[in-house]
Amino acid sequence: LCPDWQAAAASAGKGKAKQKQAAAGEEDEEWDDDFDDGDHNDDVQPHQNAPNGEDDDDDDEEVPLAIKMDALRRMQSYQARQSGATFLQSGQMKMSEIPLEISVKELRDVMKDQDETEFAGQDIFLLDVREEDEFEFCRLDGATLIPLSQMKVRYDEVPQDKTTFVYCHHGTRSMQVVRYLRTKGWKKVCNIAGGIDEWSEVVDPKIARY
Image (tube, rainbow, N blue to C red):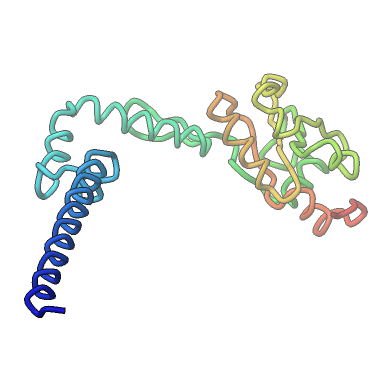
């Protein structure tokens, strides 16, 4: 073949290749533009027009101090009720006469000789908040069953005029119930630390353990 012809063919081939690359580049550019128009732009950062968190400070300044103080008081009042205290208007907390929690030994003393304890002269209500199958397996004498799973619809069955001792298996579920009832206005509710398992271990080994 003629060298001039070969050079011309090669030049034409390179020209076609450049045209293809240019077309591919345009397609890629179109695809990139479509992708950037979507919701996948990782370069967008929150508050990018407010360096050093100035927007956050402005938002805080826009909230009146009275509203902030009211929110704080409400939170403190809620926490106080959970722990068995009353949050007074003066900002002080008055602790409930009934402790948030007692030990199984203290409960034993109450059940054995109530008049010799701090609960002398009070009507006692023993509340079991485990599930029914647990209650059937073992229980404390005189206990009433209201499972934790039903407490939100049956809490009004717990007497407010009696001192209520709440227990479960290990004391976790019962503490949830005590805090819940106190936020509902029940002030004379008290958790039994360690639950029926510790009662069996410390007080009465005849109670079956599981």
